[in-house]
Image 1 (cartoon, one colour):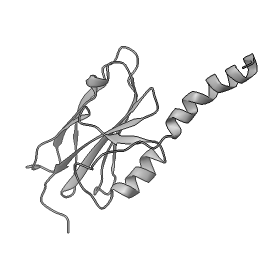
Image 2 (tube, rainbow, N blue to C red):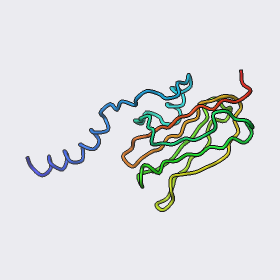
Image 3 (tube, one colour):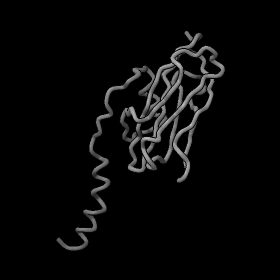
Image 4 (cartoon, rainbow, N blue to C red):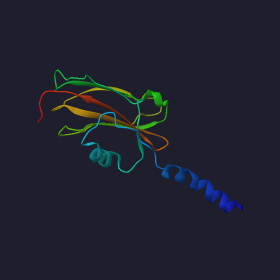
Length: 144
């Protein structure tokens, strides 16, 4: 093999590795809106449902105007590029777009407002281009 073919092969292999279908696993919080938000927020990027993305919220929102939410992606140890979070059944679903710098932990706690019971999702993009999705369901009064 000549050096040109070797260089071409070396450049092509990482791209080909991502072309392989990745099994995302079973959705831990089945939702009628997942397919829409997957396409809308993550595009066609590969993803997996991953328990290492900790999305902590109360099971019932006593005060739907101030719901505590914690997103913890420290399990990825310096590989996190971006964290996105959304509430699927909220009128304004996008919660946060967080890009931790080198010395910032991929871990945040915030308070959100929800309008009704809704699945919450947090998607963590790692340096390899794969989205890791954590999910939880929060119940609340309201909605239809």
